[in-house]
Length: 254
Image 1 (cartoon, helix red, strand yellow):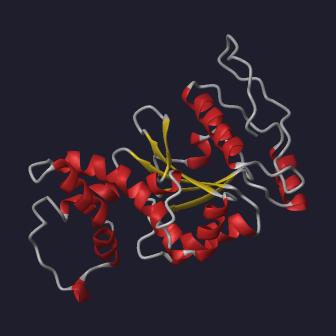
Image 2 (spheres, one colour):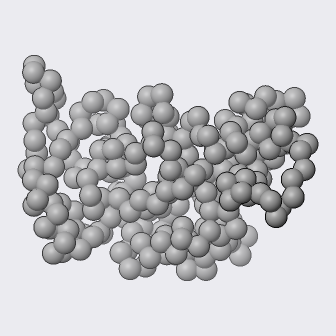
């Protein structure tokens, strides 16, 4: 949808816009155009000016008959407090959404890499956003394995649950945060820093584990940006590209 709406009326209702569904018949957007659309949508959401699809049935029909053409891939956390389409005031067909605990791609996690490759190649999506969020339980859990009371505990890898193994895979961002903040930093401070660092680690992992995405990033066909969703306000803070990608560092993903 991604269109502006009128201000709320006195009865607190919103004007329903006759915005058409975005389908494969529409022109693909550049990364900068797509980023602007996400920012505009988030501003509407934060400002309580969300728009609604004029016809849900018409929307479904258009998408079924004409296919999808999302403006961006957004890799977000599975946390139920972080609904991606709602955050960007988007409707079905606007965003290609991938979610897991911690918006992560540890060890080149297959479904995240493959789905991102599909969106970039088959759908022509030129913007990929990795969006972390404040108060991320996955990153807090991983942080406690590094600086909390569980940091010194040793557990047989064979007896660890899938969750325990997954959290362990998220600890590199937490260890990096400790190096930056110092050994005396609290769990909360380390986790807050790790949330941001993990966003860029996910971008780095995608580039390193996908030659297809790496080539598109190098050629400028795809841009990867980081973001943080603030649960407290609904605002999305855009962090830009990975520092190495932003300066054209050829070592990333080599």
